[in-house]
Length: 129
Image (tube, rainbow, N blue to C red; front, side, top):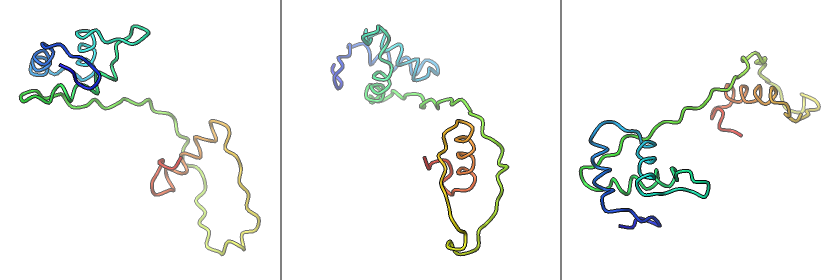
């Protein structure tokens, strides 16, 4: 059987159905096993996990085969400086402010502070980058 550019052995659908019913394997574990069963590896000899993950929904499209939910990535938190910047609302016309200047945010600590300011003061939060 061929799905996309990949050739899949006949017993793979039965294996996937049994694997999905027989416990709660994650999609990564299923993708890894699929790569091993089908002999899918990249030039460095590592399993083609991304390709296998993309192919799993097509393989699981048969009745009675339900994939486990997609795994949520675990992102490493990066420290944000405390929101100690002043909250000074401006209530005058722009021309009364005088000369304004922009400064390049170059240092990592300055970038984190800028991100914290945007996340707390800008309505869309940290999406502005």
